[in-house]
Length: 404
Image: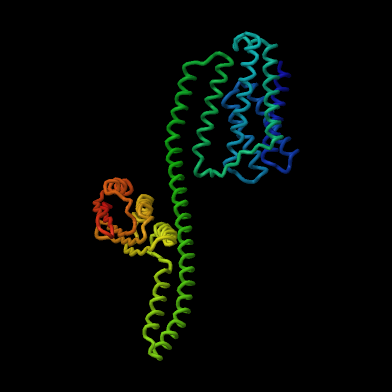
């Protein structure tokens, strides 16, 4: 029986050594397998002699596996510690699975099977067959668990895994031997309490990382808006250069008509050029990157079908770059987008934001529906709304009470 146990330990040692060598792509394959399997075998035999299987053997096995990887790779990472822990858990799971299978097939309880030499041999052989099959499957498919986690930030997760592996080892031993005592239960309870306590730190770290990610995404979004603004400024400069170029010739024409005292034609040239200038793109720059980019895009879109004028005199504030304020303004513009002419003014005074909208050529708006729509669009803060739809030039005045 002792020779059989040594044989089983040898098979398990070889499998563990081959797995860590192949998984971590260690260059010195033979040396790595020889060193690690020898250390696994010796430590297992010694632990069997002193009857210290379980947590002690598990700790020694993991120490040997991690030490071997660090020695050959010359570095220690999260994966270097985490993967051996997972594989050791796989060893325990395959052993329990083999015990359950044999128990179901024979109809004998686990305690009786363990005390039966023949069934014990079947369990050991089946467990190593399952372990060998799963190991081969993982290595054949080159299954990799890629972590970008650092030990500094995620060391707590490893501690939790070690504690859980210890719980699994104690419970597994108790199931196999049918001898879970009160002390075992107290130890398991204490270990689970430690895991629960460490989970608080994990949640804190996760929340902190999530906040950093959100800040990073917001920075990227701000950069995208800045790039869009830069593009708009470049396009505006091209338009201005073109206007200046045309203005030179317009002035020359006006000068010529004035010299020949053709005043009506000179005035006509000036009026035509005035219309050209009016039709040029509006560009708003308030230093609120998100608001500027989206507002300018919206105005540019509306100018294709509508005569739009705007005057925006607001300072740089988080409120204006917020999704609620931007959505409110966009919704308001969409609401009157079918008008022939739209004038929009946005200003601020102390803790108030004043939005004035004048539009004409659109009569399909009802006063009651307008109040409900605007209250919903700017529902993120208190507001006062005054709507006049009776005049030819209709108006919507909104005062947002900003309580920052």
